[in-house]
Image 1 (cartoon, each protein chain N blue to C red):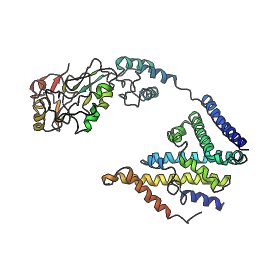
Image 2: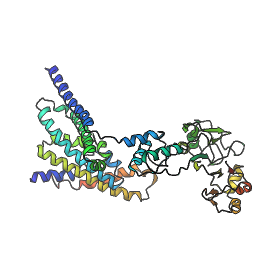
Image 3: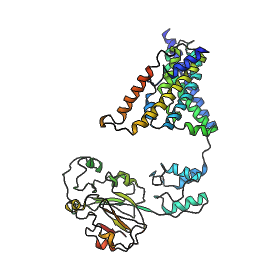
Image 4: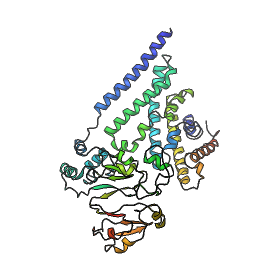
Length: 192
Length: 265
C-alpha cells in the first residue's frame, strides 16, 4: 500500500509529466489560458490515461511479450489508444451526453497526446505490475491537472503584466513554464 | 527464422488494427445518435454560404440553434424574407420581422478626388498594398481599389470604379464576406432602409482631410446643426448618422461642403 502511495505522489510531484518529463507540452501551452478549459482538459487527460493503461497493459503483457514483439509497443499503443478514445467518444455521445459535452473537444484532442502515450510506455521501463501501473497513470494525470491549474493562474497574472515587446506572448510563457519546472525540482528526493 | 518473425509481427499488429477498426465501425453504426430530422430540414432551407452573418459559426450551427429554439428566425440575411417565412413555417412560429442589410463601401476617394502618395507596383491585392505604408492613397481610411472585396463576393455584386469599390445593392445579399475581406474595414452593413449615408470613414482632422481629399468628412458639424431630428453626431472628426432617427429629409446632404453625405435611394 505504501508503495502505491509513493507511486501516486511521485506521479504528481517528482515525476510530473509536464514539468519534469516535458511531455504533453502542447496542451500545457495551448489550453492553459483559462482555468476552466485547463481543468476540463486535465480531466480528459486523467480519464484517457487510466483508460489506456487499463487496455494497453494486458495487450503488452499477454500479446506482445509472449510473441517477442515488445519492440512494437509504440505503434501498437498508438493504434489501440486512438481507436479506444474514438470508441469511448461514440459511447459517451450516445449514452452519456452530459459527460460528452463536458469533455467536449478535449477528448479527441488528446487521442494520441504524447503524455498519454508516454505514460503507457513508462509503466514498462519502470516494471510496474498492473495495479501499480494504474495508480501511476492516475498520479500522472493528477500531476498534469496540478501543472495546468498552477500555470493557468500564472498566465492570468501575466495577462496584466507590462512585458517588454520581444518577450510578449509565447516567449514569456515558455520562460514562466521553465521557472515553474525549476520550482518542481525542489520536490526531488521527497518521494520515490 | 527472421522471416517468421516478420510474419508474426505483421499478423498480430494487423489483427489488432482490424479489431480496432471493426469495433469502431460497428460502434458508429450501433450507437449512432439519430440525427435530428428537424435540424436537417431547417438546414436545407438555409442558403448554405456559411457566411456567419447570423452570428453562428455557419448554417449548420444556426440550424441547430433554430431547432433548439434558442435563435430568432430572422437572422439569416442572405436568405432574405423567403427564408424567414420558410423557417417560421417549419418551426410553426410567427415569423420575426426581416430587415435586410446591404454592404456599403464608405469611401468616395476615387483617382479624381483623393491624392496618391506612392506608386505601388507590388502584389495587386488590398491586403498586400495595405502592408506597404498602408496603401497607395494619401488617406489612411481610403479604399485601396484592388478588389479584395470583389474577389470575396460570391454574387459578383462589387465592382471597382475609378479605384473605389462600389456595391450593387440589387446583387448584394448581405452575407458580410466583403466586410471581413476589407483590410481597411471601410465596408459596413447598413439596413436597407438607410437612405442617407456618410460615405467616409476618415478619422483625420479636417485640415488633413481637406489637403488630401475632395470628398472626405472634415467634421465641420454643419450637418449636425441642420439636422432637426438629432440624428447626426460627430465623433473623432467623422459624422455618423443614427439610422433609427434619420427621416431621409435630405437637409444634411444639401449642406455638406464636401459632398460626402449622399442619398442612396
